[in-house]
Image (cartoon, rainbow, N blue to C red; front, side):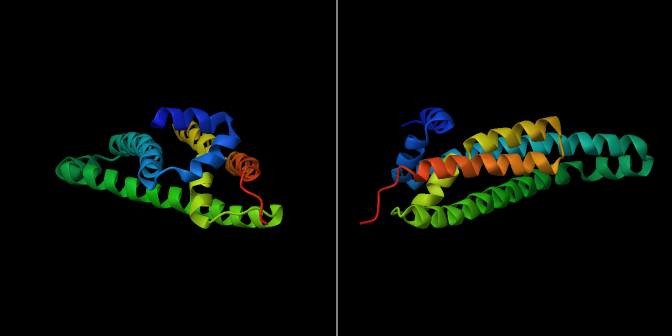
Amino acid sequence: MNLFQLFKASLHSPKKIAIFRLISIGKVMQYIFIFIFLLTIISFVQFINGISVQQSSMEGLLEYFEDIQWLLYPFAFVFLFVLNTLFSFIRVSIFAYIGTFILYTMKRRGDYRHLWRTALFASTVSMILSLVVAILQLENGYIQITIYAITFVYLVLACRFYPIKK
């Protein structure tokens, strides 16, 4: 399957999300890093716009940024990429850990590595919402709770399609 097919199926089919646990780790990493890269680009644009606003308000800062601009932007982009990667992997890992408890209560069989992949594809809708929230620069605790609840619902629905313990 190509990445677009994975994306499209993970938006609407919990059964396919459960099946995606068998996809190779290389395809899974490509999938998550596309989202991370998009989120990093959005964060970087907001960073540049924030610096532009700060530069216009302080004259001494403008001269300083002109001197180190060639150094500041690459390091900022790398830092944002690493930070977004860290947060994305932590979020998926926490949901995979929660998924182990879901499987245990549903008396289903599954490894953590399978649940990690399932949690990643279950968080597709929440990643898209995170991108939209980042673009619109909305800051609200209820939005984050809603995003996490959507991931949780997709994860529970996908866990229903895991094999039953004997």
